[in-house]
Image (cartoon, rainbow, N blue to C red; front, side):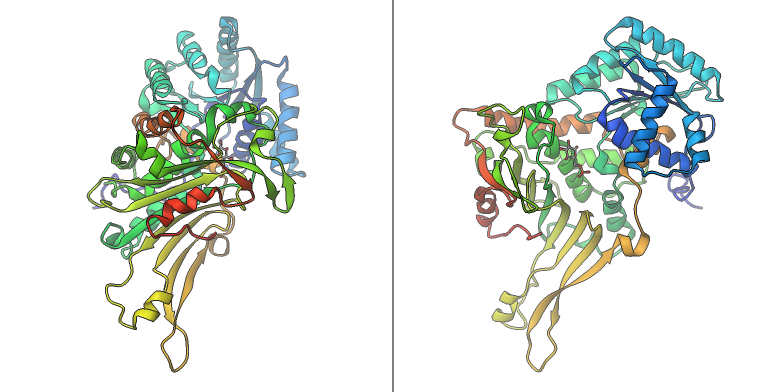
Length: 506
Ligand code: BG6
């Protein structure tokens, strides 16, 4: 008989009707991502009749005005010419509640509105709060929800909360957020978003590793020389200077997205694919990260900041010239680092991570670089011209997986050339759903497998905090300037060069 914990993964999952309360619904995230994703779920029949979406924001709007805003957002981010009947069905689910969540009054109005919205549908009191507000408001708003009796269960219904990134700005603030959440919600009802975990290609890391018999035996220090994780972006900081000046690449990308990718590559197989076992193993992998602090940081971590240059052929300004950036800001827009995972599986294997803005292209990749064969059977010169095997998981764009292998060049002599075995998602499966679509669906279903757990977030902050602490020291080398449109400062090349390795050319 099949293990009951492993059965049912292929079942189509439709959540029960619920009221989704989007706090901060007039913001960019809601317009660009949340509302379009909810509409797509509705179109696929995954947002059942009886569901409701209650937008909350300060504006003095009514339901009608909110519906107009949603219509505009869908025209822009899903596409014009949506089926009218479909839109009408979706529009009927939309409600608005005006209120400034710094006032106690706003929570009372929200409570009243929720009661009246709930009265119109079979929602059994199921509620999902989505915090799409500025992070500085999180603590007060979570507390407000709790103190005004909105976090508790209603009859048979559930109340859950989704918290957007960034989850704190250091270990201390993350702990305090976790504590406040824990005061009003149980851990099972808290969904900390890291949208990278909703990407199909990221989910596939575990499937690829564990649904194929041939890779996992090689997935360790005996066969793997090193791992490279690149999260490159060609965009600059766009209009987000206020946020970015407080964050920088270490907090914005490494603490969450890059370390989540690392955890998926490095973790041990979970006993089942349920939230508990999967997240247990991920947290263990993060706990095994060898801490970097003090002078070690100068050797193992490079920070950079983009100067003026070219992006996709267009002249662009440097970080210091971006609007809203402090004149002598030392905020990093690039990080490259060498880390080790002190576990049985990965002892001695370096993991190189790099991320940056204004790099030559948008490209996220995880590459497993294997060791060379034990003997140069075809001669030293053939061995020298042969590259080691690389398994590259292309997370985005051009989603796919490539295995680099050595092959004989046809002819009477032995010449070896590296060639690629290629799998492309697009040609095999067509377009994938947006990450937010999957994550919203899972939160409505109560499945937190693809969300960060409180302890994991804290472990990641503890690791990152030590590095940032070193950077605050007067002796620490400041960020190196790199030209926009390049692959970062030379010091990043030197970091891998010192280990006789190279960054992959992407
Ligand atoms: C966000 C960061 O979490 O991820 C942004 O705050 C970054 O700075 C974005 O641009 C990248 O996401 P994606 O899905 O475009 O790779």
